Amino acid sequence: MPIFNQSKLAIQYAEQAYQAQPNHATYLWERAWSQFMAGNFERTLTRIEEAEQFLGRTSFLFRAMLAQAQNQPKKAIINWLSYYQFIGKISENEALMLESRLEEIGYADVSNQLLDMLSEIVIDQEVELLLLAGKKEQAFNKVLATDNLQAQTYLIAMHVSPVFMVSFTQEELEVLRDHIWSTNKKAP
Image (cartoon, rainbow, N blue to C red; front, side):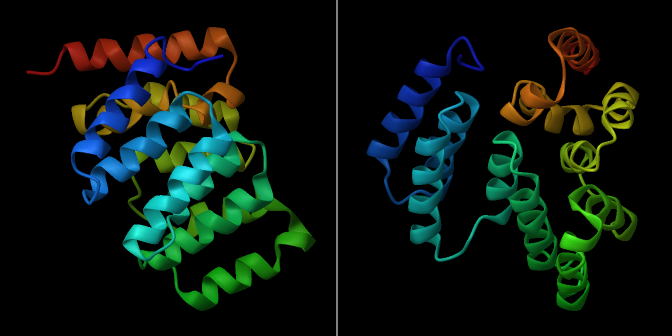
């Protein structure tokens, strides 16, 4: 089932933009993102790999979201750890320590410990980590507590993403959608 009603159109536009400028990194990622939002996970992975090959680096963030959407929490947390190490939010030793404890304490506890270590992360990533930590109600309330345009901008795409689709009921998604869009209508 497509996430966006216009998912086929989004994929088409992303492919056309890429064909027009195949050496443009943004269009490489848009190809992957449009497939992800449409729920086409195998094609998403192919597009991620193409973008990574072009850029010469791994997209731990995108891989974490993909694993989470595919209900692969262990794989998701390993990619989250790699992502936060890559951007300098945690040290290599901290990432290795948490990853080594994964089998012992499980992905939810590792997610909780990672959240405790992080400061000032963007709202969509915090919500995804809360979901991975098994704190669905806290994640839901975190979204409802946001009321500024910058935070809401991150959530516009996420409230229809496969990660949210597998985590929240249809009723919860409608509440989140209504909150996110009502806040954005108030923006200047």
